[in-house]
Length: 81
Image (cartoon, rainbow, N blue to C red; front, side):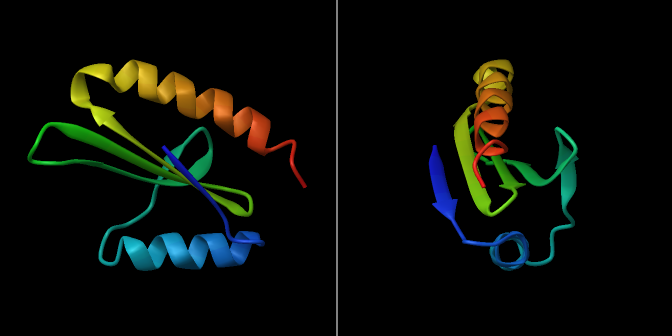
């Protein structure tokens, strides 16, 4: 897990889009997100949460746990102004 404070929503969106050039943003918990699976069996879930970039990764078999963790962190981050 990695959390980056980009100080603003637009900066977070731009930086995340730049890191995922050529990949269209999807949605996770009603937020812009980039989801991918690596050839090594890892799930990568990168989410724009307001001014934050939330980056989570882990084994594909732990997808549900990763998504639950993301949901919990999103709730906390949305309370931060």
